[in-house]
Image (cartoon, rainbow, N blue to C red; front, side, top):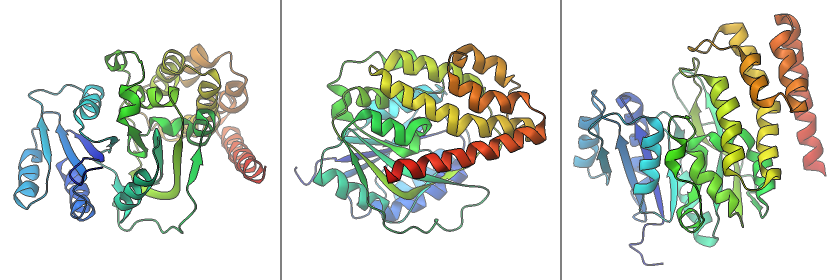
Length: 328
């Protein structure tokens, strides 16, 4: 590979979050100084805050940023796909403007994708509340190489939707027939177009087990969560994933490891800004799934103290299942 080749693009879609973007760019400035093979894109959805001045400040300080400034707010889905399609790198890492990464993460990723070719790399996150202070400590855990898409989906499941956790081989996506990514606009899941396309062509993937991405835990969801992670996710998995076993692993993880806790949180704290009836929405798309009735419906229907007990049981069940799988 020529020295001036762009091996990886880190693309940051942003809108009116200059304070968070500054925090990320300050961190990336140190990560990218000795990595000319990494392209950095900031795709600005017509911010009317200090974002343009902020990017200009970092550029003036010597940081190599390709700044895409939309004339109007085209929406998050379109901005994410614009990031992917504009990237010059062989690998594309779309990174949320409110997330951060551990020191040395870029070097570790470059080491991995230089030594082997992967269709997907998953970088494990952890979630923090409030102000970020110091990255979670970790011991260097062995990375996991997988050759079956089903195994990758089983490990990652609902976090396939987590933008900052997935590095996608753009060449794999460009060489694999797929539906237009525009079909996913206004689903809040457009990022799954490239990810699912890479899964359909899956030959080899990597899971970096150490928690290298520090993700901001949203305390109040500003969209229809059950519509997105119920109806939209189910439809996208059905329409875009060619292997039903991959689809089943994704939906099983969503139903068993993600939705029970969000249902309880929304009942307990009214965390969603968009009023929804979780059972009404989720039954329409998952009513034929036994996992829905086992793991999710009791949290919807039981009195709150019993729902809490059920969530505790589900958490313990998931932990035992993970231990059983790792010992197998």
